Amino acid sequence: MPPALLTTSLVNTIQIGSLYALMALGITLTFSVMKLPNFAHAEYVTAGAYAALIVSLSGVLNPLVIMAAAFIVGALSALISQLAVFKRLEGKEVSLYTLILSSFAVGLIIRYILFLMADYFNLFDLRIGIPLTIVFRDGSLILSNLFAWVVPTSIVLVVLLTLLLNATPLGREMRALANNVNLARVIGIPVERVKNYTWLLVGGLAGVAGALWGLQTAVHPLMGWGAIISVFAAAILGGLSSFSGTILGAYVVAFSENTVMLFLNANFGVDLAYKPAIPFIIIIAVLLIRPQGFTNLIRRAGDLQR
Amino acid sequence: MPEDPARPLLELKSIRKDFGGLRAVDDVSLDVPKGAIVGLIGPNGSGKSTLINLIARATNLSAGQVLFNGENISDLASDEVFRRGIARGYQEPALYFKMTVLDNVLLPVKDQRGEQPWYAPWRRYWQGDEAAHAQTAVDVLAQVQLLQHYDTLASDLSGGQMKLLEIARCLMGRPELLLLDEPTAGVAPKLAYEIFQQIARLRDDHGITLLIVEHRLEILFDFADYVYVMHLGNLLAQGKVDDIASDATVREVYFGD
Image (cartoon, rainbow over all chains, first blue to last red; front, side, top):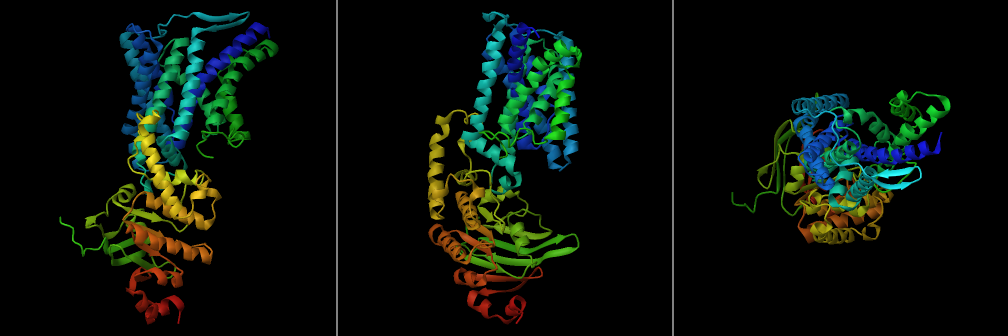
């Protein structure tokens, strides 16, 4: 494989991996605190991307304002799906399967609302209007301003989320819910309130991830859904409970999809069209060989169930 | 409604609990006066733990009413009951084993500013509150002699210390009534006596009323003011400790003589 291609693929790994981490942490957090593998998570990403797109089309090009709008829209879509659907189902004590299926349904509803909106206002395949510039060039290593936004933002948000979880009263209560929700009720933790706050955070982070995603590719109602399997693969690598494991998983998935795929293509002639199969292979392999993923392999701050 | 000083803190009015065909608690009425240490004894399976669960609203009543400070709490959720001032301990200590001792006692603090996402990221808005809560937590932990273990994971404590930590956590919620289900189960005899000394101090220093299920009668009888005896879901006897200790039916049920 030519070295220039290797460098580009590694840059992509870091850029995509950071976005996967941002999204996969939301999945891990939802699964730990709410006991729900939430497939509608993909649509909070898309909703955030559209919020970012619409703000940028209205002429505001400050990335911070764009991301704030995406955060709010993502957070609200998550909170609404909790209040309108998941909370009511939990009240009826339905099985996990019903909850998973309902998360697919919620996802479909949000996705096709976005489709209707995109169709009506003709908002298909537009990029968020921040012009692409090159901020660093050294031989084959080229970093764009996207890289300069995506990677630091993701890392800062991941660090902030870890701090929130480990060093604030809200995080303490979220960890308590993750470990034993019935006990949390008995000792007077306002369980429903903490859940709502968690949804706001999870949805908000997904929204920001959508905005960052929309900076590098075109915004489309299916964009979140297109990434969800990779994101779930990352979360499953993290054992759905470990923060550090999920972050590592995100980069492993991104590395496999970019560098490993190019390597296989260059040396063994594997068609690049097989790229979407990689997360499936990772999920199956992890579940068969090491269902707990990276948990207990690395123990760091931020693990929800130590 | 003016507060009636003679009114018991907790009143059970003909409460009943059926599990399928089994009647675990059958038409039990009892009062717990304010500031008392009330014992609840009886052989295994007599319905004592079920009674505690019913008061703490961990299970639903089949019939009857639970009044706390005169208010009917029979239909409240368990976190609401806690907020009204009823805390409970378990036979098997129920703790957050993967969290530190200090975290465990800080969790039940009501209405913390830092639990709201709009304040949580800005430490200066809640660190004052948090410091005050931590100070209360330190006092409470010192009371139960767990202060030197504040940074230990709860899972690394001994059985007796876990019981004490549970009591400390209950205290953080500033309860009026504390329900304890066998606070000395699985605890060495010497520590068991210490636990009861702690319990007596809760009443003497903090005015907390206690309802205690206990099998170690010799210790319970040293500390309790009043004792209810349950047998097969019914109240068999009640009275002051001396009367119960010498009661012939109680001896027959309990000791088989």
